[in-house]
Figure 1: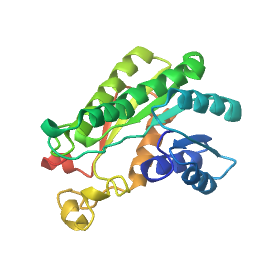
Figure 2: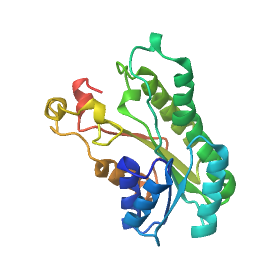
Figure 3: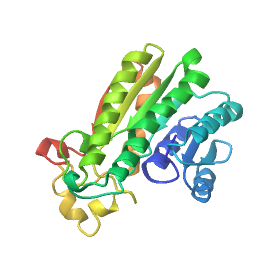
Length: 239
């Protein structure tokens, strides 16, 4: 599971551990991962630091998952970056390439690594964390939204190619109260939440429970689907 030292990723890991899974979590900083592992329980979790778009890191993580816990049955691509804000005509193309590499290409590469090492012979389930920003134009974060739209398409394509033994689904959260999304609501949470029919922003557990469902046998006849988890905001025209 990538990007799992805090926020949505850690909430997903917590839910999976609560349901009996063993998890390997990744992020850039080992110290943060060590804290997360202590929270999850060292007998249930292993943390390996590295960059999500580093193929050597990916291969190491998948290999150590098999060596430590015996399999790689589940994969969650949660890592996402958005280092820019503003109109796309002013977007730094180097930043755009990095967004694409981390948000899209790395997710595909993680699937390839898990497929080659385990899932090709044994099957499995994958969940990609997309965003409601990928559903319609999102002012200020347009390329981020475009990358998430591509991730959703990759999800559907992989679902077609990898069935019947591997299921691939995605979730599209709206604003969730994490450090990553702070700029979207800080100092005006009540105002932002007012646009949501459920009148609150998301919390990481809201996403963790749905991802755990998609990975479970309860979703055994679901693949290629994008579940929108947004408090209803897209019903009112928001993103």
